[in-house]
Amino acid sequence: MKILHTSDWHIGRTFHTHSTLGHLRGVFEALVEVVREREVQVVVVAGDVFDSAMPSADSYSLLAWVLRELREAGAVVVMTSGNHDSATRLGFQSEWAGLAGIHIITRPDQFLEPVTIADANGPVHFYGIPYLEPAMIRHLFPEETLRNHEQVLTFAMRRIREDLAGRGGRSVVLAHCFAAGVTPAAEATEVERDITAGGLDLVPLAVFGPSGDALSDGPPSHGPDYVALGHIHGRATLTDRVRYSGAPLHYSFSEAGKPRGAWLVDLQAGRNAEVEWVALPVPRRLSVLTGEIEELLTAEEHERFEADWVSAVLTDQVRPLDGMRRLQKRFPHCVTVEHRPLVVVDTDAASYGARLHQQNDHEIVAGFLEFVRNGVGQTDFERELVAELLAANNLGEITA
Image: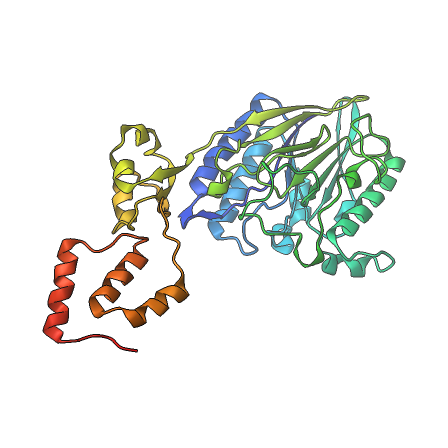
């Protein structure tokens, strides 16, 4: 059975106030083409389908469109809710959607009911674990200690292994969490809400193993053949059977350079799954440009970035006036500007204040300008202008 593992669609998210729906639709078109060309039978979406608990009408329309296209391409869809989703809204009328081959798993006890899909080699059981906040689930299982995310997923996986032992056959688990073992290159960015806060811990990798207290890449025994994880926006391989697919779009500059795509999993009978990375297009690259503003505006080497999302770091000693407007003339999609001068004067506020008592008006103005300009003093014109204004107003010396 060929399975395409994706996650963290975040439909409706903006990128520095710009809508991403058009770009996301383009990526979805490529995703549907992969399903059609590679004859994918099941698409799994491991949480954060929407970016908000209250999606817009346009976001719902895009979701409806891509689900319809995936079904017409020949794939059954299994998706779970993530920590960004409203489980109630995402799961609305999911019973009827399931009859059409769109299985949306959002109820807190729904992980106990696998979606079973058969191929020529027999059944494959898909256990979807929606994002389960401990406070929202512990009343359903009062006999269990469910105070943090680790305990919740440990409990859910134990029940899944017990169920799988009775059913037999191959299995896939979907979960939305921050699993221990994620490399620094793939770990959470500022886009992902921290689900380790408030007592919600990292989930040990062994939780997804055959027994829950050990993990190996050998043939699973009453454990999942593949674990499709969501929440981290960069792809990550924790073991051959436990992976993050990452998000289909770049949603922050901290994600620049991370590949976008999905895992194509060939779940065969009697042996380990074969897994292949399938790249998806990047509608607009993300680039961080550093330098003085005149250099960014004129250097030929920056021509290749003109169609990118641009974050500019300006190293001019004095903050350029109207920097964003000027940069957007060359880089229309410049969305952030940061002033980070190469030379920063190490000033001491207390000593600066103390020096005021020993300075005349001219020296105070000159010192202030140098202070706020990171060490750049007055020009001759400014010095003459200040002297003229002080003389005209007859301010005299400042005394303590």
